[in-house]
Amino acid sequence: MSLRRSPRHGGAVSAARLVAVLAVLLGCLWSVPAAHAAVPLERVTSFGSNPGSLAMYVHRPASLPVNPAVVVALHGCTQSAQVYADNSGLATFADRHGFLLVLPQTTAANNASSCFNWFQAADNRRGQGEAASVRQMVAHAESAYGADPSRTFVTGLSAGGAMTAVMLAAYPDVFEAGAVIAGIPYDCTRDTGPFTCMSPGTDRTPAVWAQRVRDAYPSYTGPWPRVAIWHGDDDTTVAPMNARELRDQWTAVHGLGQVPDRTAVIGPNGTRREQYLGGGEAVVEVNRVPAIGHGTPVDPGGGTEQCGATGTPHFIDSICSSLWVSEFFGLTGGGDPDPGGLPAPAGLVVTGADDRSVSLRWDAVDGAAGYALYRDGVRVAAPAGTAFTDTGLAPGSTYAYSVAARDAQGAEGARSGAVTASTTGQTAACWTSSNYAHVQAGRATTSGGHAYAKGAGQYMGLNNTFVTHTLKESPAGYFVLADGSCP
Image 1 (tube, rainbow, N blue to C red):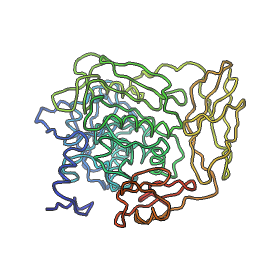
Image 2: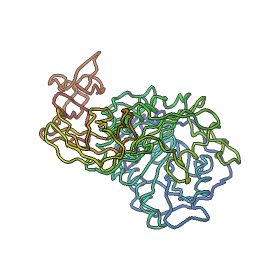
Image 3: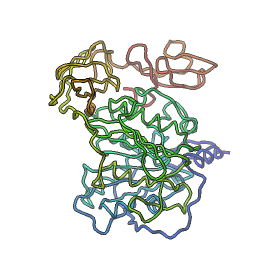
Image 4: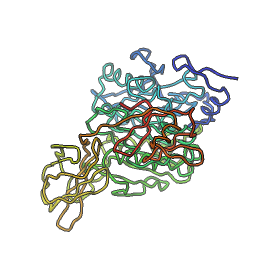
C-alpha cells in the first residue's frame, strides 16, 4: 500500500509510515478543539507566489503604531494559526506593546498532520517551498502594514520551532532574532532521519552545526540573528538534548563558546536560563523549563507577567514564555541588565587573509589592558593591541571570530559580535558516490556494516552500493556530508 505526497513534492512513500511519522513528529497526537476564537485574525489571501502553499493570518492590534515590529509565529503539528494565537499568549504582548503578529498556517494537503515540513529540502531551503512562503508574508507585512524591516522576528513550537530554525538559517538577512520552542537544529536531517533528530537527538560538534547554518546562505556576510531556545525538561517527543545542540549550533555561528557568560533562575517555576554574550548583549540564550513535557510554556492569569491558556494540549502551565520571548526580541521596552565590566570592542573587521592566516583589527576600548581573541568560540590569543594575525589555519576554510577587552586583572568584558573570515588556497573538493565507493576511496569509514564520513564522523547509512551521498573535503582529510549543497 502506498500514498503519494502532495503534487508539488512528487514521489511515493508508505502510507502507514508517512502517517506515523507526521502524526508523531514534533508534538502531534492532539486534536484541534472547537473552542471560541478569542484572538481576532485577518486572513490575507494574496501575499506572493506562495510556493509552499501556506495560508497567512495576521493579528493587528487596535492601536498599531507606524512602522511596527513583526513577529512571525509558527504553530505546531495538527494546530492552526488560530489555536496558536488563542493559547500562546503572544497576542497579549502584541496588543500591549504594538507589534504585528503574522501567523502562517499549513494544511493536511502539505503534510498529513499539518506540520511545517522542516525536515524536507523542498521546504527548508532559501527561496523555495514553505520557507519562501513565510519570507513572502514578511515582505507583504512591510508593504501592506508599513512594518519595520529592521525589527522582524520569528518563533514557533515543535514543528514550528524547527521551522523557526530554518527561517533564521535561510534568511539571516530578514530576521533579527528568533525563539525556538521544543525544536530541532537546522538541517539535522541532512545525514539522519527526523525520528532520530527528535529522539534521542543527534550529537554533532558546534563547528559542524554552524557550517550547516552557513551553508544555508553561503554568500551572507552580515550579522547573524540572536536566538532564544526553550525546552521542557520532561519532553519525550523532542528530546531535551536538542536544546543543547541548538545552543552549540548558534553559539558557534556567533563565534562564542559553549560555557554561559551568565545564568539566572526566572519566572514562577524556577526556569533555568543560560546566556551567551556578544557585543554586550545576549545573542544566544537557553531556557530549560522544569517538570514540563512537549509544549509552549504559558502561565494563565491576569498578572503583568502572565499569559496564555491551557485549554488545548501542548500549552503547559508553567511560565509565560511569550513575555520572555518578547523581552528577548526587545519589544517590551525592557531588556537584559548590562553585563558589567568592559564593553565589547566595536569595529571588528577582517583586514586580510591568505591560505594559512587571517588578519583582524578592532577599535580600542577605554580602560583595556589587552584583548582576548576567539576563533569559533575558542580563545586563541591574548593580544595587547587592537590587531592580530591568526596563523596556522587550514586552506579554503571558514572561521568565526570575536574579541573581548581585558582589564588589568585579566577579567574579560563582553565579547563583540562575530565576523566570518575564509582562508584562500585550496577550495572544497566534492565527490558523489555510493557509500561503498566512499569507504574504498578513504573518504568514509565503516563500522558494523554502516558508513561514517571520515573526519566529521557523520552517519551515512548502510555501507553498500545502493546508498549514495555527496561528501565535501575541507580541510584536507576532513569530510562532511554535503548532499545538495556542495559547489
